[in-house]
Length: 484
Ligand code: NAD
Ligand code: 6OD
Image 1 (cartoon, rainbow, N blue to C red):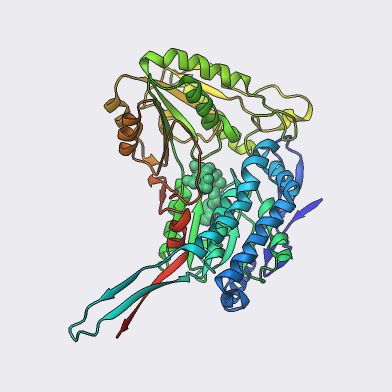
Image 2 (spheres, rainbow, N blue to C red; image 1 turned 90 degrees about the vertical axis):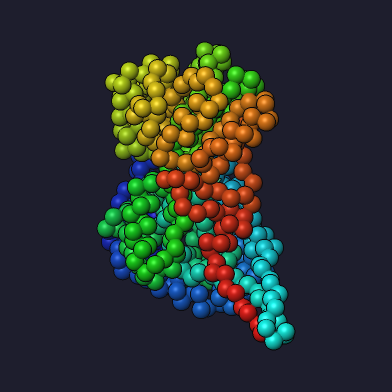
């Protein structure tokens, strides 16, 4: 049986307490995960603290970033292992992991190596009463040990999105992967050792949230800053933990993202993009669209076309060819998603397609499958228009004018992302400017330049990461004032 171990101070560490990791593809056992207790978390944080003072802390930026480039190259060299591990944990199609998760996991090391090498800091020349003047310049220093708490939907991508910049800035990290997806963070430990990352710079502790590795890590006073991606409720708990010791947080949290399709939109583009935003990764993307507002003249055609696209999606196991959708991440998550499917019908939704569990062949029948689902007939006050489902489903609602749809799209406690489809460029800018979110796409979805700010407004997040914005979180800017 495969053993999925903690990675502390450059070594793989077993523990007595273990939990099962089953694949959502057919519920078979992948391996036993060794849960870190308070002792292992303490050891990981101590190793990370010691590493700040070791060779890592003394390296030049060029030496450090050379190592991070090697890490990226080594992920690509072991590409197939990463793909297999990610797909076994999540059930996602290998085509998706090969195009998105693993290449982006590697790119996150390269891009932030480039950012830290090229980011300038400020300089101000000032006058003084004696006429001699003074010079002010800012330098960046690592914040120290960063606690990285990760979700399960894009495990390697979202973990390296934080570990990449944290290490580029000279910090050390203790990562707590999701209990659902422990494998690729562990595999990355082997890569770190192979690339000469000093012991203690990258550590992984496995476990759950409350009264487990997540809580032990976030409450540990040896952790200087905490970066988190996950549910809004969890983010709030972590923010409270971070208040003790006045430690900074970066929080990337939930969403209930709207798409707005105006009647002048290119229907083919809107459908292709909305199919991806609703159903990619089985709808388990924080940026995914769960509310689609369609201008009334286009409404019926849009519903017919989205239904056709959803019904053409091929559901299947990760390695099957041409598969578009895998299972949900777990039976537990499927129960949650199915409870929303039931609730939608109870509240009066018309099910355009899906709404249940697909028939799967053989042992796949034991997996966490659900059908891609489209509803109409409910308004903004319904449960499925307000709560994040995090599954392959969306509610389509008609609208009649621009001001109305802006208000309705914004009428949520979340504020992560929005997509707008129109061929009127002036309207696109006007509407984009009024969306209460961190990211707006026009005639597209999930297009990412990693130098741009990424994060959520309202209850979708605190802070921005990406490009130089990541440097703001992962470094302390210090001003040095020199009297001449
Ligand atoms: P989650 O909040 O349940 O878990 C995330 C991580 O937090 C896991 O590692 C978990 O073990 C840990 N955790 C849970 N309770 C904790 C506690 N009390 N203290 C410390 N750690 C704790 O989220 P999830 O179910 O893994 O992921 C899905 C959610 O993540 C969705 O809401 C989705 O929108 C959100 N998400 C947001 C973004 C973004 O960039 N905004 C990206 C991906 C996912
Ligand atoms: O693309 C990214 O960098 C990113 N953070 C994506 C988040 C996706 C959420 O599920």
